[in-house]
Image (cartoon, rainbow, N blue to C red; front, side, top):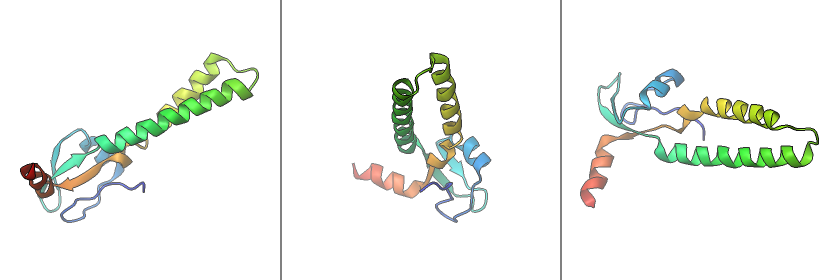
Amino acid sequence: MLKLPVCPHCHAVYRYGEVKKLAKYKKIQCRHCNKIFYVSSVKGKAIYIGIICALLIMINIFMFNVISNITVYHCLIVNVVIISLSLLWMPFTVKFKKLDVITKKDNTK
């Protein structure tokens, strides 16, 4: 499930740092086959952010109800740590798609 994206044309492997830099662009040219492809990350990030928010809410409820001497500062520290760790997983939500497939879908509408 969690894997870094590859070029949809030649299946060239893109590493973590490259995906992190390329995620902000809409279209990218492959460094191996020089073909252009589309970067999609909205759907994956939306699902991922929803899961992280639900996890944070459950952890906060657990900490306030079960742990007796917890303060807001402890909860804040736990939330910051979880959010920081979750940002490291963001490049795994990026997908690369062929530009041909995108234009065919747009033409059929």
